[in-house]
Image 1: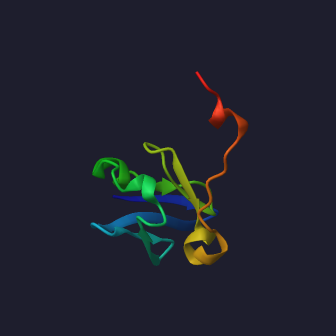
Image 2: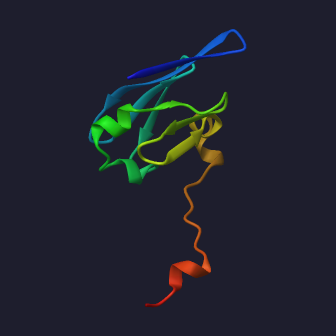
Length: 96
């Protein structure tokens, strides 16, 4: 699925090129990126329809609205600058 939007007379787009057992290949603003499930594990078991429903979220990010996932385009360009970190807060440890 490809989504195109107009932004100050320039065309910006994002599309899923491929989904396989290792991850997802995206085309964003004319550049291709492979997102490994090691990096985005929450998308590994996502329905294909939801993965294909990707769109631009402003000029600097993409989003999967069905999955409540968004990524900055810079994190695709420079993944080493964005380590996957799970942050915990006090509510995670509330006992029933």
